Length: 93
Image (cartoon, rainbow, N blue to C red; front, side):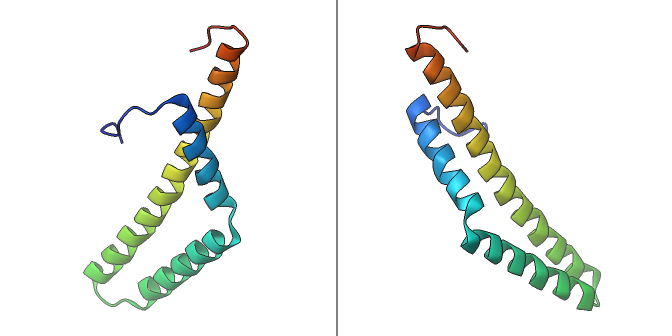
């Protein structure tokens, strides 16, 4: 994540807004819940440790997607606050 390029505050706001929209989307909620349920079902039925490890990795990946979307949302809100402060003449950082 540190390797990502610097974005303008406006770009951070736009990305945050899109990320929040995805997180609130019924399609995203249903897709991730369904995927998680399917992975857990495979995990419960698995007979071999490497199969369970693969399922665990999939759950971790789902969690990471959710976490990154929340990071983008938070950064967008922070950028909005800072930009609003600058426009009012304040010097928020």
